[in-house]
Length: 180
Image (cartoon, rainbow, N blue to C red; front, side, top):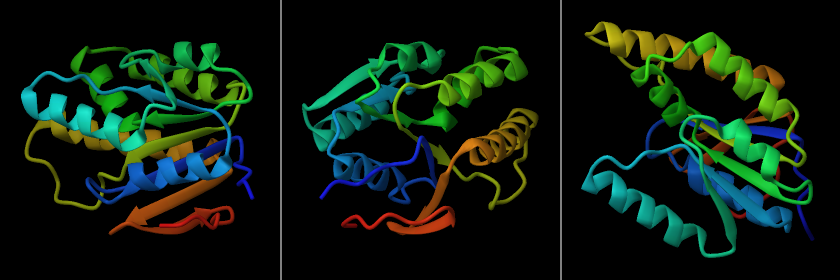
């Protein structure tokens, strides 16, 4: 039995909450060919190790696209029969802020790219608004922008799943039954 995923799914949670693992399980349960859009940039050894670990965890049967700045370009290349994991919106937003991009223009591009994707897309993103108020301007700007992006992503998604301690909870839509 295969899982039919909605057009757009958002998986949100804190750092190391299990959100990426859960998103991967959703995609694997679909039984469809898999694509992965990576937004991370590996600037140090720790991040390079994390990328290697994530690739090994996924396995070789994923088409991978490195798209830290324009993931919508990668989405255009992916066939309709593929299900795509965009991991993650948070790192993409960090890339935009650090490059002093026009966030509104870039966000519109991202949202339009997701809406017009040919196949189902699962978007991983971090919940960053449940901690303390950051002590510097850039961190506060990031927290605000991430909260707004998450709200906009949730509004266009058919399914929104919060993952905490590896446990999924549907915030919008019906929680699919996958082995957790």
